[in-house]
Image (cartoon, rainbow, N blue to C red; front, top):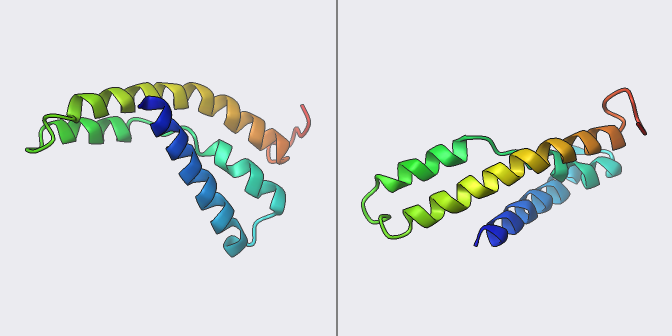
Length: 99
């Protein structure tokens, strides 16, 4: 379940980047790299999951959703910093391209 969530979340970020980059007239190489910089998602998703737990009608699935969200947040926060650093260097946006 968590793997599917992570995969679909990244696919959405990738699709959004590929469809939005031409509209924004971004450099083609940035189109390939920007999805990697969008991986970190932070605590807002955890907060939304915890809010859902208190809403009537979601009692049956709230524990599953919270578990998936917490695990994916941990993965994204760990992998996101590495992939963001890679993408920024590869795009030449750090002033230290290629290092």
